[in-house]
Image 1: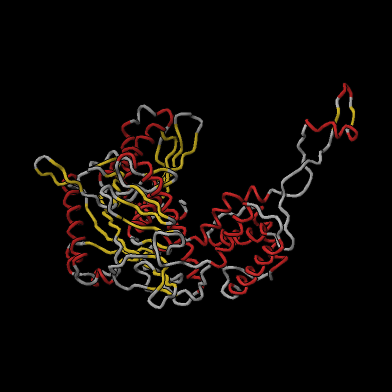
Image 2: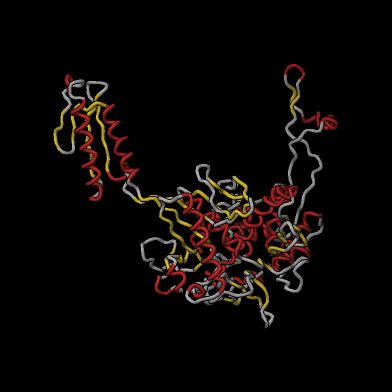
Length: 546
């Protein structure tokens, strides 16, 4: 297993032609953890930070694998993208057969978890003891132990029948296996099975000190050494070894002794990582947007959120999300043919004070079923204008219906209170003010494009940024054609690592904009902002969907 204390870090402060993220050997033959773009602030030599990032990236790759395996398998019959599996590697291919990305698994962990899923529940329940089943073909052997009841009924409590069991001297291989699985599940933030925890704690009490752990900076090496010795003793003293024993033994041995073989990317023991990280970055951002934004009208996304794929439409052979009320304008038409463009995400919002947010209407019933007492409460200074408009509408409605409701005596008691006010007029007043506010709203579209760029690349002229700007302006132009009354904003969203104690400018913990004066002239002149997203925070939202 990896020693996070000795693991070298490869932090890139600029965009690289090599988009690999994961662990592989460096020029000196040492394992090296290549971090995503934007991690130039990641701390060096921090065991816990490195360990946490490794296991979160492991879970991120697993979710990406799970989501895309299901997607491509379901589309395989239609000639869309598909996956080839070779050893522990997954090659995602497009419809022309070109490699898109290569994702490799890490066998030292995979073997343990797969063995647990396949065998654990079955193996853990095997125990030496009486078998409570009744074999009626041998019941005559137990008639002398039977209890005879009325109506010629006999009762036999138990039968000593043959039962397959595993018995080990000294440490138990199942307990050792459960200890390792329990430690892994804790780091992977998975729910631990109660029985696994019970056997893991039993193993710890009998063979380790209270502070020993596989993933503790101080005790990692001593714990690994102890487990290797225990595994060796178990193997020497175990007489009966069936297929289940060898499955557990090999999984434990691989975990304790295994290393990452960086020589061949198509065989077992391949390096761990993904050779192109940008598709994962897009999925992370899209998942965050669908979980946190209220009104997404368009997204080039096929992610799974709340157990369902968000894609609901197909344009130009590509599945996307498009709200039914949103007319997709992102195409260029030539000679009757449409060539579709696909911005990452379009978010619609309005900038105004909401009636329900800024003033509160409290209603009290009276002796007349159709009338109420009404109190209007100001919730903010900004709501004063809205309240005055609301008050004027109420007064007008009172005057117009004075004769009709004269017997109830509706009247204005004070600036913020009405007595015996008809319910129908109250509802009418609410509807009118809401319509007025809706018509006065400033409407916005925000075009967000997820860019796997470094912050520095947005501060100096380069061809990649210039191309991205042209694409973004094309999206804006197409959107303006159909939605003239909307203000359109554009932003690039890039990954960035923030320390836990970082203080964000506007009080949020999601990220900060790069100051406009630091951006390239082309970005500034075209009004495109660059947002440095808090990678660790939005990654948590992504992993919550695993």
